[in-house]
Image (cartoon, rainbow, N blue to C red):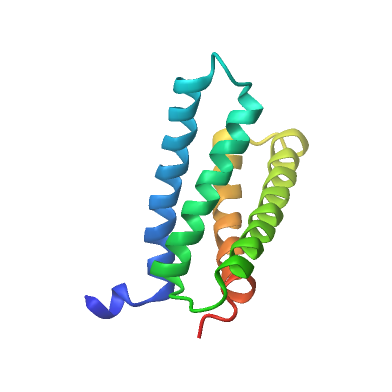
Length: 131
């Protein structure tokens, strides 16, 4: 069982599950706490910065066990997340508007694709100096 926990891909899925729950909770929590004072887009920006920062820490320490430069890797993580966000938005648009897929199916497909793309981006770009 311990050798399974050492597998980077399994750690990525476990870390990703935590990061998803954290990001969802932060977004909802900020909205409930500040929606009467802040616009939803500002809440979204704040929530994303907090969520990406948590993702970075989890991936750096738990998943990739990196010893590279913190700031450099942190900034690279924004490149990966920006790239996967653009891909996800375009795919969602194509699947829903272009191919008329139901949103629940389209979003599920997009998540699967962006999880794989995000793993490859983090493994080969964000934390490339981890070893």
